Image 1 (cartoon, rainbow, N blue to C red):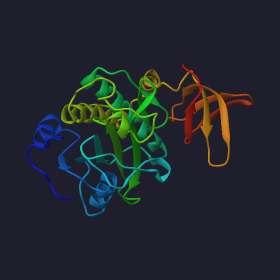
Image 2 (cartoon, helix red, strand yellow):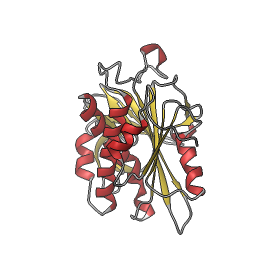
Image 3 (cartoon, rainbow, N blue to C red):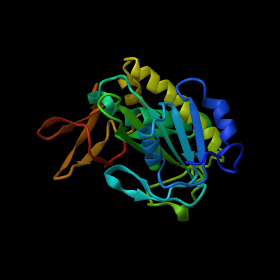
Length: 263
């Protein structure tokens, strides 16, 4: 992982370090391109890197989403970022990690661009109903030293003809000319705040619900072997989505959610 110091046209490493280092984030690298920032930090963790490491890039050639979905955007049109953390909360509660990242991206996008970003459970950030950001969190390390890599990708400069799917968007397409550097800085500051609060035992359920666009909608939850339809009515203390179905309420801790109607 080659460190890039100073200024680049897309991500200004020095400005990012000045903006976010000194608390939870202790070391920040940028690279012009990489295979996967998540894979890079997984490897760095195995090689002894300390928690608090941040890696950002303007291009990934082998980026992955949930369910091993692959995606790649043109150079310097999207932010790919991963962070290495060591949560103190027990691993059964780590299902909150992608939700925390979603909250951070939502708040960071709002602060930096003024766009009305909203959450789609469990790991997408939407603007005007279109996907702006995807999230992938992975546990790394051993039983004696559990860690997690929290990864996210934000579409910044993509044009309409560059979108991976018609239901995606970018900050540019939504009318914002904010640069990648101030946007990423806002997200990382927000992530530090939300992760720290959750890790010390604070409940963030109410704040997540307030940002979640899934609640109040008719949804289909696509599972590996079936689909479940109902109304999303809330998120429980464990971060699971509560859906009112014809046979009664059900709680989901994983699954692809499709919004069927406006909230």
